[in-house]
Length: 130
Image 1 (cartoon, helix red, strand yellow):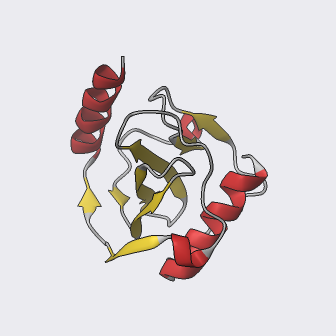
Image 2: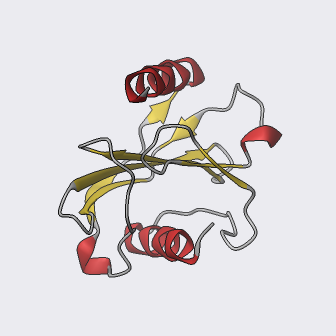
Image 3: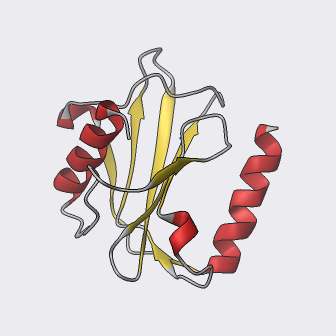
């Protein structure tokens, strides 16, 4: 993770009160091929049958003023799975906010996402970004 990404994730988790047990300073990450900045955590080390939850969805304005929507997915062990990033104009995020006041939570989300639903959604997003 870049220092900007790590600081944002730590701030998001702190602001939301979510119970995440991932140490972002040593997390194994891979950048997903969506062109906007989504990040996967330890994806090669987990079974596809994991059930995900959404502890803290938020939005913020990027440096260019464009809205960015965030869905933060964790697995049933409260470990980070993915930071799903959607910049509404489909461009790359320039910078994640470092000020708590710039992060707007939608509220505490505990929606359970079944693997098939998640994978289908990810496939749709990847095909629309191409």
